[in-house]
Image (tube, rainbow, N blue to C red; front, side):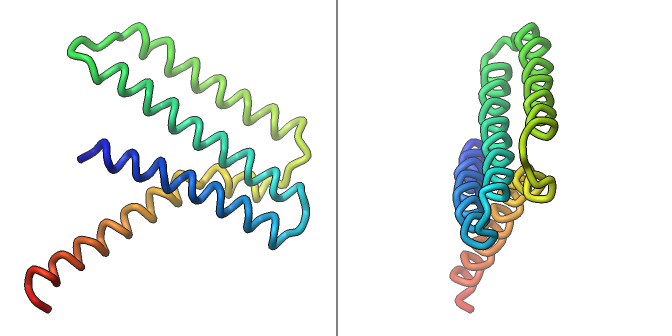
Length: 130
């Protein structure tokens, strides 16, 4: 059950990434805004995917490999933080669109939970005949 939720969130995050990138290009008509949103959203999408793989490999086995968790998680964090810092310092980005791009995972989680509530309500109405 939880694996499907994580996969759904990952899929929704990719959809939000694509739609947001296209909309930022169409609405703002400037490459800077598209680049800012797309790069930040791609970073957060890859970060979520890597974190998912690290957690699955660390906790999916019967024996938890603490060395992997102690090394891989901080290393991933420092790479992620360094990448964001380099892009903010040296990239020609719009900070607002960059922050919106970084929040696509949050948007995906909210959409997933709203869809789950709607489907639960729909199933309940089907069951009760209302």
